[in-house]
Each structure stands twice: as structure tokens, then as C-alpha cells.
Length: 183
Image (cartoon, rainbow, N blue to C red):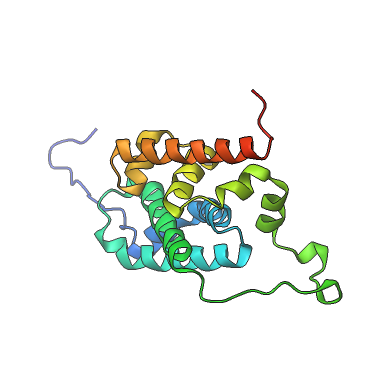
């Protein structure tokens, strides 16, 4: 109990500097960002580059972020936008497949490419327009509700619903065409 004449000592907890706060918030987001980029771009090297680009863009925009409790959604939006730009504008580098003698050993192969090559729907998602790919990835890969996707992509909810509808219709049509959907 503080009696009269007692001295109150006030102290402040040192405030986290900007760089420390950024690192603390971004560190848990990086694995998911890399996997999201890998799903969208279908290549581990491209996913690494896109994640790095997103990290750089996030760092540059970090001082403007007002709601740090929404950091994950904000960073996802940056990753999606970087991937969208890469899908729209191409990657600039053309990769040629090597023949069997020069092939990369199985343990060094690209995990995204191998997994998506085995997944028929994953391959078909890659044929969709980039804007539809983003919505499908966030809905079914990140398991986000449509409202959250709209927030992360900064789109009206109706646009997200429409893109998802047209994407699912195109996927079903192609699977029907290939005779891979049973009714």
C-alpha cells in the first residue's frame, strides 16, 4: 500500500522498434506465403523470388500499415499481387527442360511442380486466368471465407463470388470434357 508521502515510480516498457516489430510479425507468415506463391506460380524458384519480392514490398510499405493485427491479411495481399504480376507479365526467363542425362536428381526436384503434376485439378487451376487462380488458391488452399478473400484482395465480395463461380465452372467443364467427373 502506498501511503502519503510515498514516491511513485513510473517506468515505461521500451517500445519495440519498427524493424523488430516487422520481423516479429512477418516471420510466422513466411512459410505460408511461400506455399501460397508456390501454388500460384507452380515453381519453387519463382515462389522464392515472389516471396522475397513481397517481403521487400512489405518492408517498404510497413510504416504505412495502421492495423498491425491484420498483418497476415495485408502480407497475403502483397504476395498475391506479386504473383499476379508475375503471371500476367511472364517471368522473363524461359526455362528449358533438360534431357534425362542432364536431369536434376529426384531429391533436388521442385516440390511444387512435382505435386501439381500429380494433381489434375492443380494442373487445371494453372490454366485459369490469374485473377481466378488467386481466388481459388485463397478459397481452397488457404481455406478462407469469401469475405476474407475480398478483404485480402481489396475487391467487392460480388467480384470474388463471380470469379470463383467462373473458375469452378471452367474447371468442371474441362473435367467433364476429359471424362473425369462422375455425376
